[in-house]
Length: 438
Image (tube, rainbow, N blue to C red; front, side):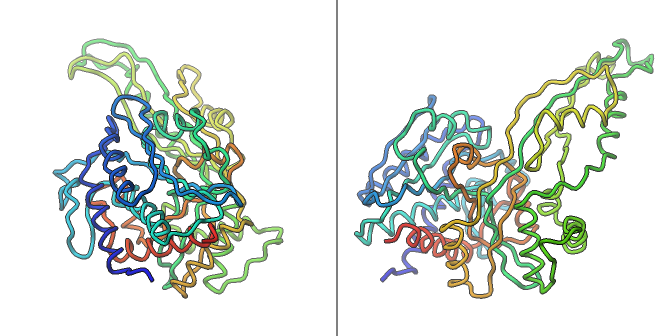
């Protein structure tokens, strides 16, 4: 029998230690966290290997051997976190303080909290002394927040045994919420594509005391206003349709999947029930978010150039090339210079799998009122690299968050409740145990 009180304390201590290791990317410095995790696994007699993709950029692979009857299961995670301005936080972002029933700190949700759950899923199976039907591989990677060039992308190029042969990946990307009193766990089986693009306009330089009608900043403002007024067409993927159908079912509403007007009905349902939820609205459309503007160096000098960077997220079926052409048509200015900075195709995994069924059953066993639904993530994760190789990858972080709590991720005062940490560990462990046939 598992002493869950003891395990909960161990998971809590592990997460606190991980948060205290500052792995802000850039520069990352994940190697320190990797060495710490290696000691944790060594104390449990679990084999690990450290892969250093660049100085200080550490990746760790831990393994629990199986009998080979099934293909490997990979528990995926990343160690790096985004920046945090400590002056804005109620609790220091790298102090990992416990207050009001929460552990506060950068990475508590994204994604050291889930990493702690994965680590103990492996440790608890090891402590039982049983051999699973499949090898279980835990990957704690670097560099996810900056594109994974020094992390998963690099690891897959090293032909590390078991990764490309995996049947399933469990990773970040799906969190739960309370919807009309119903606990809803999202299993992220797809994610939107990425198009990061820079647009540049030129103006007439000169002394700012003599205004010019050809001001580069004003020209850019006009163009960004056109983008801001652009209303993209509804673009529902199969994942989004299934998500909305399941949510309608949970609310007692009947929407016929074979209806001729299904997409319109789903749009009306989403707008009525989730009109203010950014995480849901982002599933319905291709999106454009201007994020960086650069122009000028001195107050009294008119800038010659103004640049704006756009973060576009694309629904399955839309290509980066095709959407860039749509943006150009919206901007409608042939003098704009365009530079594509980064692209990634959207990806989806099927949900008619053994693992998805096990996730649904496990969630309901531990939380009987809960439902599990497929989910299209607006953001990118390392799962995309595995899906491109035909491997089923799910984002399944079994915690319940309010919409406001979700916005703390990459924001101010990121935190995870002790209740979420404890119940999430239990759900993830039972899922891994069941799919491994221990």
